[in-house]
Image (cartoon, rainbow, N blue to C red; front, side, top):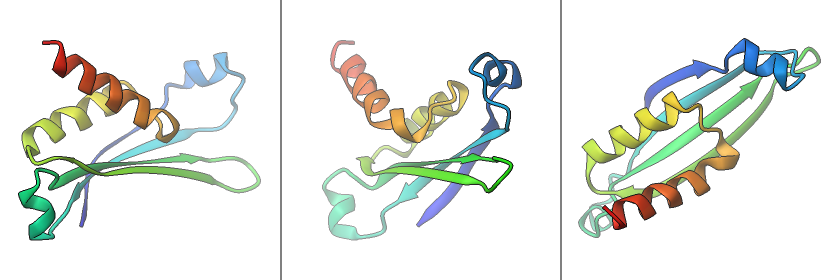
Length: 107
């Protein structure tokens, strides 16, 4: 199951600096894996990001999911909030999650 967490539009000034002349929306979702066997292994929650580019000719949509991230819902909510605040896109999701896991290991 997928539940909506939040969304944001990329700052217009940042888009103009990158010579992008159309709005880009980012949507963030929490994945809830309901399979009991998966939940017992510590991977009940995941994340999903959808990026929509509202181009003149037709919208372009990109999506990335990490289905099994953690069994700690609060931690996943914190990660989603950080992803949203930093406007993380689907293409960089994997790298950002790896960086998060490295930070946790070294704290």
